[in-house]
Length: 130
Image (cartoon, rainbow, N blue to C red; front, side, top):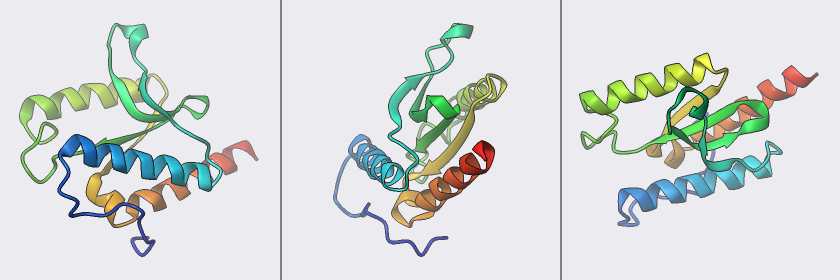
């Protein structure tokens, strides 16, 4: 699972948004490579309930999304109470609206686990359509 070489590398000295965009680009390229299709970036999904929440990457035709959680080791937004609570609301709403949301950290992109997760998503979607 974690043995897959990653096209994403640590130690580039990038700010968090730049690292996240590199991770999103690497995951997008891999999704295309394995036949999952090109995800749409920054997709709004909850406007029907009056919210402006977005997914980092989404395959709307499959109601599947991928969130790249940054700042997990530096007490970032996702680790502080208010940010964590808002994430709970966002992901619960997504589930109730029928979305499958995969969550990864930038470290999971670096070590390959995020790519293995996309492989599993592809397998799952293939089984559903069979």
